[in-house]
Length: 114
Length: 247
Image (cartoon, rainbow over all chains, first blue to last red; front, top):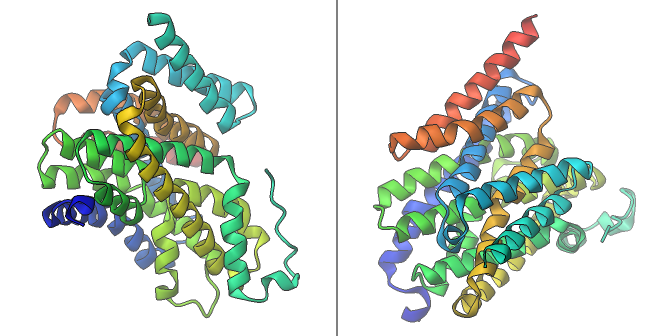
């Protein structure tokens, strides 16, 4: 059992650094959301900030890549995502086609680099 | 893989249990399930490579239930950050969940719905469930939407737990190229699904400015760089929207 979960300290870290800071925004949405009108100006701003933060998360994974992604050169990571976006636009906004296109460019680039 | 849900007056919707089952079955009707499966293979492999236990990463999938937050949690803790630094990075990435919850829950409410009935459905809300709720809930009778969402959420969670365990087990044998390919899925899928959900000029501007401002803000090394670039970009985007509305 101790091999499966590791030590209890690690689980405590998961709750404090992972679960609570993430879940608080969902529960705040549940708590405060009842009074927010869907078309309100406040929600336009909140949505814009949320979208920009998500964009920041995307940029962070690309600029400061985790794990094995760090083995892909900068220009190839950016190029692959740009190519995926181009395919997405050309296929009338198909997420699937865009994801496949971006991945193919990344794999082809790595293969070409050897 | 389109799945035809029964018409709203069908007897299939008479019991919450059957509505729950339709929710579970809907997991097979979306290509996003495939993206999610591959993303969680990557998270399992990343956790293995950063020396977390299998039980720990499975618990993180069930409790956190948000791909980017888990990647950020594992990579910041793995790189020696403190618990407080990791918690800040995670909570900043999770702010986006607030407007998602606020925009989805009105679709599930009936006059009899109590707040506690929505707690589990709220926990399941993340990008995939948010997109799928907008697509599927209009086809589900209103009083069965919570049961349906529970089925969809538990089904997706089961798929992701399986993928996490599989990725963890395979990590040692996973070629580095494959591991890199699955880690690239998260930014690709998030960028494209956000781009598709952009409804107003403010959303598009926020996405573009948010991407552009993060590399600048990251030079500050504050630990809350994403928050700085996100609030600035979002507020500028909202300002442009407000200014154009006044014209």
